[in-house]
Image (cartoon, rainbow, N blue to C red; front, side):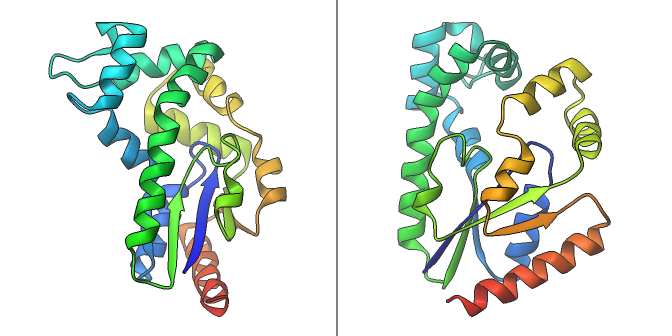
Length: 196
């Protein structure tokens, strides 16, 4: 089993690349999905966050109001660290269990904060998605409908893309056409297949 982590800055095409890998028959999982589930109504993670930060972050259904929490997290580094201390252990334990259960030769986990959490050694190979900063900013503004100031805060909260790319085994450039990205994903699939 080859364990691969897919990472990159916010709005650099990780989800797109993960989707293409899945289409090629590779087992995939997204840490963002794990977090979304963990912040649902009545989960231990939701209860821990509400106990630490108050019920102001709870929606009427008992789930975490992710938009409100995100505003606080990206404005206050101490809050971000406290939230990450609650969420990240769950994410990595879920990923560990997932890798134990898959029966395919390659598994890819999309983990936006892989380098920030210093967990790259848990994986055999690292793939990083990168696009030009202006493209990243525009994608983030369009996708999440936030102010430019908020977008810059979120980008700045992560390790710079160039540094992530320099530490990666494979880099996918996502600033061009979808076809160009698809070709790089196909090349990645071939390369990973040779390593199994």
